[in-house]
Image (cartoon, rainbow over all chains, first blue to last red):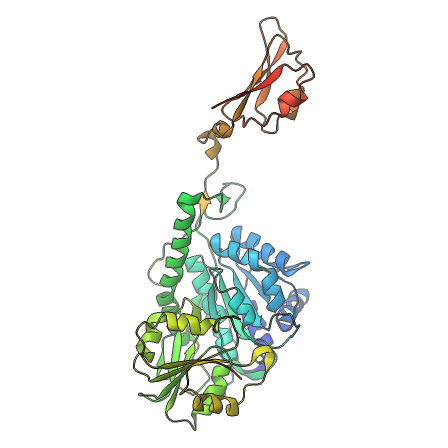
Length: 384
Length: 92
């Protein structure tokens, strides 16, 4: 990794909190939960030390924290929150409301397993619980991507009136140290101007309105259809926003993927025998494995919502074997990513297999990935 | 983003109750017997929708009147009237 004077060697949580402080939200509210704690602890300390000018509201639970930022966003402010696991599940009702009210919330989800049995380590069970809430969902592979996604998320959220969740793997990203470039206030301001909601679209005592009133059966479905259309339409804008941001802040990582449009990234040979599909930090381990596996490619999904079905189809179409590696299981069916991927590949004739890895923080090593690649000749669901 | 996106939010302007007369929700309608009414205004104070108001008649006595545009027919007034001057009658 090339180092320059702007590269810092810092903890993932610290990188995220510094970026959020430079984005300058108006209101921050969160409730501490492992492994998200360091992010909000840092932000609270910045506020206490007079280094940040946002309002920091302490909440009595995640439900309250989410409700506070929903209220603040409805009143026209730029907001931030962060949570994990059980906290995200406690927020669930508010998450649906935030999407239905079309409020530009941005939230970091430090992915962690969901109890019971209680477990504080990383997997994607919590994120998959919120996949139908109507949020945009981005998954970061490394610290730099997590930092970039926060800036891009605000750009998207505020231009589309959609809430965005940035998923970072708990501990793997939040508590590890890596070289990362933190964008400064000036760089961010150039890309992301101060948030000014359109007049008459936010709560204002001088000009009262009702947000998200009662919708009867004649109108409710139209609202849901609009939400679906707008999230799908955000895909091309996410791609453009990613490209624009990369011009301002080039990645410090030297590996250049074959295909990268912001939504997905493909690394590997032009005609792979096997494509591994994964989200989040495990993509880094797979890239390391691919140095010796020349017939295998990696398709990394950055944006789970909107689901980049078309781009995935184009890359997977002619590959004889696909293997979906995911850190979540929809008990009684398949992994959620696998079901959605197969749903978006009508007429695919190759062998597809679903590998459930790293549940509750179970280690995924290069050896595990190699075993998975060797087992892709057989279709079906496998646990590792 | 260069192209201006028409961002959406489900909102409503205030004052819609002037257009939506909610009286059509009721099944029973309160009817006031002006001869029995003693003008105590108990019904007006207890009406949850503020649909009963007191009006002076030509003998300068206070009598209860109902705003049928918004009365939902809950029947609290009839139950609370100390002289049983209010009766709930079918309204459909």
